[in-house]
Image (cartoon, rainbow, N blue to C red; front, side, top):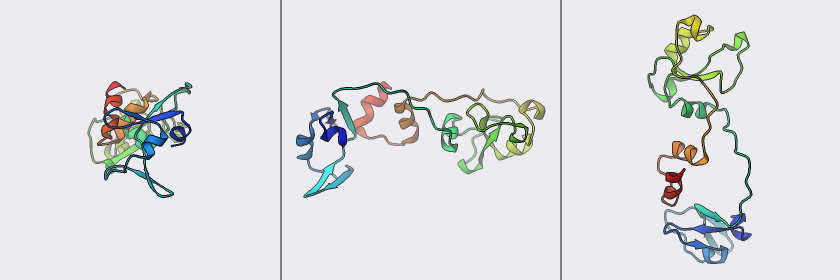
Amino acid sequence: MVLLYGGVGHAVDTAGDTYDFSLWRSLPVRHADDSLPIVGGALRVPRVLHLLRYERTPRAQVRLTRENLLLRDDFQCQYCMRRPGHRELNVDHVQPRSRGGEDSWTNLVISCRACNLKKGRRTPLEAGMKLLKEPKRPRWSTAKQISMVMREPFEEWQPFLKAG
C-alpha cells in the first residue's frame, strides 16, 4: 500500500489493467477482495503490484522451519518413502544431536515415526538405512513457495506463477 500510495507502483487488476493510487481508490471493494479500512470507507487491497522502478535486493534465504522441511521433503519419509499423515512425520537429525549434529538444512530430514525410532541415535549407515536424497538448503523462488503453500492462489497471480 505504501508503494502504491507513494507512486512507486501501480495496482494491477484481474484484466491486467494498471491503476495509480487515486484511480485504485475509486474502485469498489468486491465480495472476494481483501480490504483496508480507511476514513470514509474501505480500500481494495491489490494482489498484484507493478513496480515502476526496481532495485534488486538479495535473494531471501528460506527459513529453517518444520513446515519448510515438510515442503522440501514433499511430506515424505526420507527413509521408507511413505507418506503418512502430517502428524505422523518427525524431523530427524541425520547426524544425531548426541554426536554433535546440528540443526541445519543439510542435517535435518523428514521421517515417519517408525523410521525415526528404528534409526534412534545412530547414523543412517549404522542403522542400515538409506536416505531417499541428500538433504540440502532449498532454492525456492517466491513464486514456487507461494504455489506450494497456497491451495488456490489468487486469480490475479496466475500469469506470474506460471512464469516462475
